[in-house]
Image 1 (cartoon, rainbow, N blue to C red):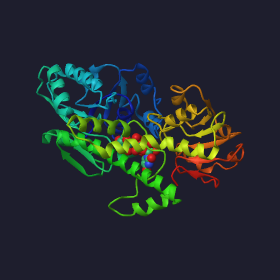
Image 2: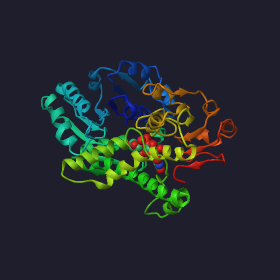
Image 3: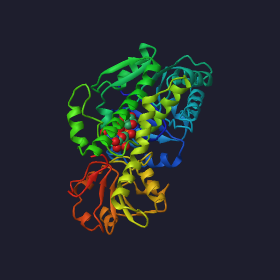
Length: 424
Ligand code: UDX
């Protein structure tokens, strides 16, 4: 049955969820406070780079998908999904300001609604937030409207594959307190073949944090093994290939390199550390996961210094700026600490990324941005590979244009022979 859904927040999660629910035949309204985003979505222009997003927008924008800045649109719908950001604050805790504002605005609109309305929280929030913040805020702003129900339904979308992940999830988690709410959420995903698990609000909220923390732990673990392997002259990729074949471990997320970035892992782990410490726990493993991750980019530069002697006035080509391939997102990209460290040592940086240059230009202005990998590599004293972009795999003659051939991979992608890896 097609549903009428409003989605608060036209950011990454909100927009991807909106186009996917529209693709499933529902009628979707995005409520977004940034008028520029509203206009671009309505004009079917994706405000972010994401595979498949443009085609989905072209098929649905202006038909069963619209965007607006006005909360009154909620009244045209029966389900509201909250997809606002919960950025980390200085102490690692999640900033719930946008969530609280959204809850007040939703409640305010629902004051006079007489039919049932389900609110589904999708934003990543600390356990207890749905119960202690979302429900009381919406209920009091709606003047105790008893027709409102709640669920927490986390997303596990990877940037660059988000649409595919949406339609092929490993599981769907439904945190709720009554069968009616569960039934509605189940109906939204009725044609998606995946285990659907009902939990309490807090369990669902914690599943999201624990999943991201475990995945990040796998990466830092692989990096630590990789650092040891490097010293012993062993290829960590061959090692982790053998390790990952144990079904209890699984072969995924064991790629060693310069560490994890992005909008989720660092933020969520910092938040979990803060939560643990607030409760008087010392989350030693999670802290080590973060420490290893902060150290990997510096290790890359240390290795480069060993190979090149001094970085002063040396031209260093950086291949890749995005936190991973197939995205223009540079949030927490490991390229940022690499750039800062290289600059500290007086290097001249020539950087290339297929799509992330405009994002990086907003925060780093004093480096040379190149329009091709060949341009960055020409005359370079060394090259560092920072993102696993598929196009880097086939670079060959471009490396021959370097002044000296010191090529170090922070991500394993090159087919070119004359190279070494940060920890392989
Ligand atoms: C992640 C989670 O995977 C997703 O479920 C969640 O909802 C949001 O956060 P995303 O941030 O898009 O998704 O990226 P992901 O593909 O998980 O990669 C995160 C980072 O880890 C990247 O910087 C990537 O390069 C790095 N990584 C990943 C490794 O260093 N090694 C690996 O083996 C895998």
